[in-house]
Length: 366
Image (tube, rainbow, N blue to C red; front, side, top):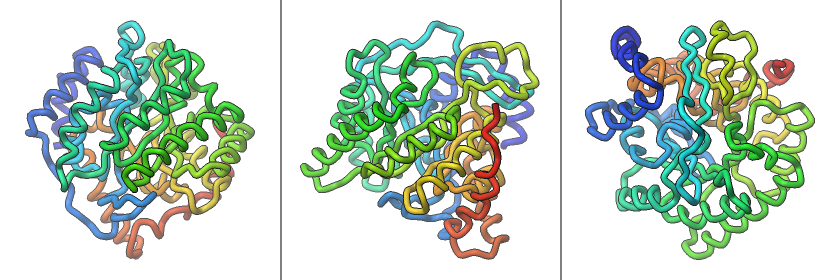
């Protein structure tokens, strides 16, 4: 199927505007015809942050912004799916066009700007699936409205609204497409954000005795000093993990110099090295205990395993599916099973950190 998609179906989709093609993908998933679950392999199963994952591959936030197809994504073979980013109030996002494919680079630039239908629409959909006792892990990625007067309060509102329907939360403070959002990564601002968000989590946990994990998603465009600050703040709070990383503003070594001039965040194959270096550097800073989710350029079993060897417990993809099609989750999971067997270990977790030092020794690209 992957070969068919890359040769035929992708051509049809790529003839459309990026958002039109995305809408068609969501519509196709809603029909259920794309279901192709990956085989269960005990060697890929892990318990991370108190959650039992059938495999380490997840769909990153950004694909299912409005929580329309989380279960359909799980049926493609993902071990977990993350919906959002969802803001308290619906917002249209930035002017169109705002998605640009760099085919030669297997990359995408987007400047969507947290376009979504808001908390209530997403909550309604997630609450309808919540009665499913066998449903897989679905996390909720929360953000702030562009015109918010109190962005921290927007994240707190997300915790309260989705606590009954989310298996975990991601506080997204690293999108480059909402002006000033990345300022929340600064040391003092991050202290305040985590204090308030985790306080809201604890308040909800007291009501239902379930303590939902909270992850923080950071940018790949950080300096060594910036990584130091985030690690220090993360370790000073009962944060459950970090997601590394969001899209980049860098345009280093791209073949396509036309779309490369577009503003927005770059994702896909070109971000693999940068995001993996930042991942390894953060693993060294935060130690072996805190979970890390690696994102950026994952499109095969080999790239997924490299993230794990660099320090990730779990990995996520999005752009990889744009280029390889809906069977790629199942294919990656099968490839991971083969690679783990080849390595001669009982569980994929045994391969974590094998290459952390080597990746962390590299300079973050300019």
